[in-house]
Image (cartoon, rainbow, N blue to C red; front, side, top):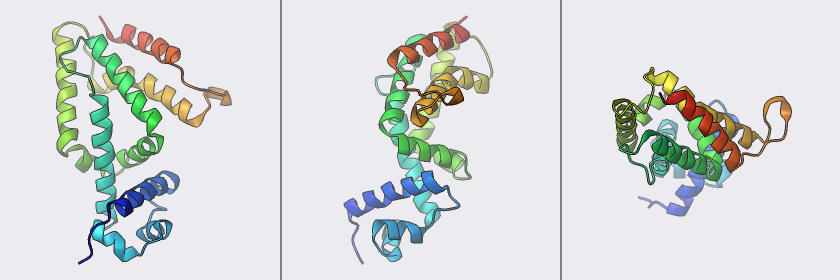
Length: 197
């Protein structure tokens, strides 16, 4: 049996991420991936059972990296404003450093793979941690009660809109755009006003 080559495996993941972002799942295949990596299709099956297994592993790996980054220096016991700002900083730092991975995770998140990926290990722990953070903020009267979907839209929607503008290099109407720390802070301050009692 052939052994795993970690450099080759990293190349496979990098090329798979590129292809998923560029072509979506419809244009993504093991044959195209093998060709892009200059390896045989049989070599891919040393690393992955099939295409689904590969996509699941990529989704889990990106998700774990993203969520670990999001909670760096964060605690659910933090005061609400401080904790949310730390998450904004961490989420933005990851998105700016790894734009392809974030774009790939967005594709995977809007697919049938989402639920299974979101239930895995660290990702499930992350959901528990966020729930604790919101419950603590509510109990300490630092957050206006609202449905989770509305909370998420108000708390993170402005940040992700700015990050999308930055990734595209354009804002509304095609105006050139680069996200600055001042803009991020301005958006955060408006968000906090909407969320705090």
